[in-house]
Image (cartoon, rainbow, N blue to C red; front, top):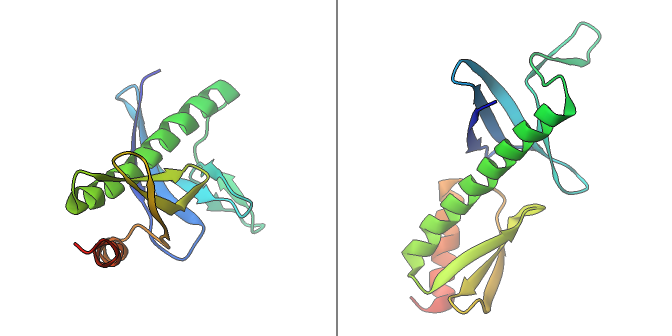
Length: 147
């Protein structure tokens, strides 16, 4: 099974941190897949669902076996982390080639700025990956570094 995935970061006050869509074998698309940040840490890939008459939720589309679920979750989470890295890479490029960012996959909002020799420069916390927050972080780092 060939799966192509697309993920975009979501910047709101909810527990949903990303939205994904997948294309299966170039012939079937599933949209509205949510990446949810869990209160105890980590993430959950939630298939698209709708509210039922009892107030609960029913999946609209979902894998029917664990192997397929694991494959889809892995693809989506890899794309999610790649999207975060892309955002941070753009910011690091603006600071110059001697800096780069890193983050732990269980906490995407705590990031570390490292010098090219991997020495820690400082740690930062982002509420979201909105461009305005990235711009504010960039200005804060420039002041700290005297750039």
